[in-house]
Amino acid sequence: MKEYSRYAKQKGTLKGEIKVVLFTAIGDLKTYYRYITNAMWVFMMPIGFLLVVYLFSGLIDQGAFSQASGGAQSLAHYALSGWALFYLGNFSYQMGYNIESEIVRGTLEPVFLTPIPRIFFILGKTLSRMLSSSLFSLVLIAVGFVLFGISGSASSLIKAFLLFLLCMVMFFGIGVIMSGFSLRYKQIGSIANMFTFIFQFVTGTFIPIRIFPQPIRYFAYCIPDTWAIDTFRSTLMGIEPLFDIGREVMLLIILAVTFNLLGYKVFQHFERKTKEDGTLSLY
Amino acid sequence: MRDCPYRYHNLYIMHVKNVHTTYGESMNYAISTENLTKTYPKAKQPAVENLNLKIREGEIFGFLGPNGSGKTTTFKILCTLLLPTSGRAYVNGYDVINETRNVQMSIGAVMESERSFYWRLTGEENLMRFASYFYIPIKDAKNRISELMERFDLLQHKDKQVGKYSRGMKAKLSIIRALLPDPPILFFDEPWLGLDVETKLELKNLILSIAKKEKKTVFLCSHELSLVEEICDNVAIISKGCVFIEGEPEKLIEKIGSRESIVMRGAFSEEDVQKIQTLRDVLILHQSKKDAIHIAVKKAANTLPALYENLGSKIENISVTNVSLEDVYLYFSAEESKNEGI
Image (cartoon, rainbow over all chains, first blue to last red):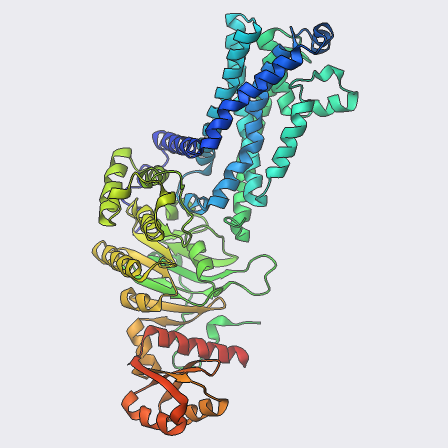
């Protein structure tokens, strides 16, 4: 007695956990892209977005926009950098779908029968979405450089990239919280969609926050995406930030740590609750 | 208020354990429960109540009962997918509440749902993914997957997406997944659900061969009583959350005191049923809307003349077989229903 399964002896090693993350991420990417419509969507989305930005750029008074945005060269410059980060943040709110899809598919219980810490499973699922989102974001920025002539020094690019990574960590924490809620309340897709819809307007993705009425501005300040977008954009393009850039970075670090710790606890709590209620696989 | 453990206390057939064991005693069993109770939120009655099971290492244990009797609830608690309301449960000596990870490192489980795979991934990709969740080294996982897929006759389909697998193939894949880490304890929840006869028999033989050759403990929830009878060392029948009979299938059959089972079809009245009840050595196991009566007798040859004498031409069809676990199940279920009605 007390013997574990013969092949299940590598518990808890870093190598083992990395494998869990990779197999989950690769499996999800394969599953996603084997649906041809998903592949088409990923290809069409940036093209559509760039087209809209290009057309709108010609209609807007660039001088007035530059003033409202704190010094952006044009709407195209402003919106591209905003969208790159917004799209990255978007995945975190949609991470609830990760768990929801596992429940619908019937694969959540078999996964929860295994001894892996759930956080690595979520990390793997997140990684696959993140890779798609990051790829989209980076492609947008790269195309923006070519089409609209976005200028940036090497040091600002490196700083922006590091900020991008920091934002990824922060968004992961938010995603884990969303996953926990999804585990407990199942269909949180509508809430996620509501967040996404509202946030794209109020977080300064392509409309400068400075032009909002005060109550909406304060509301925007309460959303982590606002700070991620503002800091990233200011660093990449030298646009005037909403507040001091150093403080904004510090805030992002604090938010990243807080959301990750909170996410871990929230997920653990809701996992226990669903096991008490017997609703783990219910949808 | 219900009082499960003592419900059949006065019946000679009763074999429910109500022994308070210590942690040390529980360690000696592959699976054990102590007054295990689960009440779902807002439920009026417990789904499982004061369940006391003792399953030895290497035993194939059948857990039987009608729909909603508490089988799957027990299965899920033992597999760490559900938390009990009270009582304890130990799997491989580990507490399912406080040593969850150790339990998960000791078991393989086959769920009834065929939709438990990533349909756009191939059979092999699915298994590699789950192998990583058991921390199986990649090389070992590949070898193990090939070995098991070959054994289950799926090797030629390893590169096919699971969505294109037949139901039987998915059932086999589920068993392979459970066997991946080579666990000492296996759990099955309705492994034969929706399968054709050939596949059922094939899987039965595979489960039996794996359990016996590799000395695995098997906890099996099923409605397939004939298959359960063939492979299980011990069975327990649960109804409304309480185990009301437990033991070796052969001994349970002996406990009925009858050797043969008779099923009669025809248009029978209540009076006919009463007549049958008065006959010597006859136990009524089941009657369905008076068009079929299922009875157990000591010797059919002695009872058949009396049956024809009393029911005569009303009998359209009659068949005689040896008493099986199904008859035991019907008998004790009927007893249980009578008791509920008291």
